[in-house]
Figure 1 (cartoon, one colour):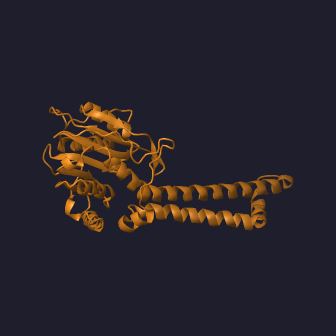
Figure 2: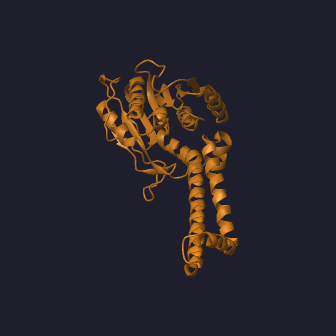
Figure 3: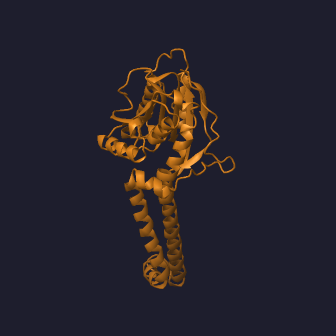
Length: 313
């Protein structure tokens, strides 16, 4: 079987460069999936509230703050200029704290949107890259998390009447159990299987899956070495090589990720993948993100275990 990459016209607004909304409200998505890394959202909101309170204090207690600062300024300047300097420092500090609060609230909002509504919309767009789900017997979601993309794949299998299944791979057994619960809530539990494993050494034989997908996960591989180190880049390239290894000849791979997309494209070119396509930029988690799709050629691809690095990564 050989699949083709379908032109990705769905779930995308060509004028704004953003995914269009699906029929689902974000509250429905959040009710089923919740969100990963809620600690980051909590951290951003706490700091945003702190800076908001600080800026309000500067606003309502401006004169006392100026008097306090004026006392300190007297130690370094003359009496005639101390009042103006103190008021400038107080006003500038108040503005900075207010702007910091706004930026942190915006970052928290973008993080929540990216984790819930955008993640769901991008999952719908990713599954539209495969032209015929009815012929898919086995699919793999690497780093399935709570199952937004996994269940989107399962839904396509169900809609097309396929007898196929999708396997969700995650490093945490606790996460895989949570994912199975969301699959049952979505009514696609019979199409979903979850396994615990490491993407750098996938527990599957060569040429096993018709479709391999992954959403905002590969950039996390090798993070124990630091995101910008050569070692981390090697781990990400190893993970990408594993994705290609378990993909059948003629199979389709679709990856949505942030930051490191150019190095993914270079690695796929080194592995002689075909129909490599990169989507337009979509802002996610305050940075640029892209979808990369490719097809594994029908002839054998050699040297999948070789890791070649570009120092410009």
